[in-house]
Amino acid sequence: MGRREQREQIFRLLFRVEFNTPEEMPWQRDFFLEQIKLPPQEEGLGAREKDIAYIADKYERIRERIPEIDRMIDEKAQGWSVGRMGKVELTLLRLGAYEILYDGDVPDGVAINEAVELAKKYGQDNSGAFVNAVLAKFLRPDQEEKP
Image 1 (spheres, rainbow, N blue to C red):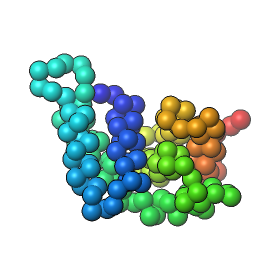
Image 2 (image 1 turned 90 degrees about the vertical axis):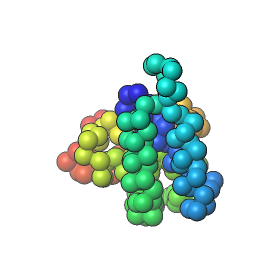
Image 3 (image 1 turned 135 degrees about the horizontal axis):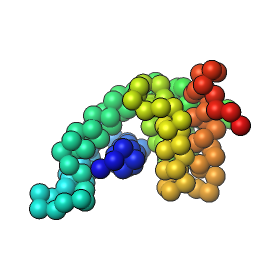
Image 4 (image 1 turned 30 degrees about the vertical axis):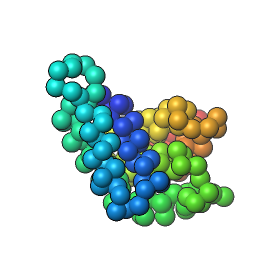
């Protein structure tokens, strides 16, 4: 499983945070990870143990920082609050912001591009543009993308 597929699985797992209580999330996490696990007899499909470990670890690191990330999203998304945002867009903003701010292994441009692509796949018609605009505000001034 490549990084793009891992990121999509992290998004799908993180999306569940919006529909479950904090007490339910350990069960939800375990159930989700079990569903994507590669059956031992199959090759090429599903997630291997290293993928499962990566997805679970990154999900937990993002989940722990949700209150902090949400405060920053509220500051950057002018005219919007996390409470008014669509669940897909909010989840992708959390994932993208985490990667920009805390994950040194993911270049900022990749974090934004991947979040935009997932927004196009799972969100509304204008989700990609919205996610792009908000995540671009997380870049340091010396890193801003040129038009």
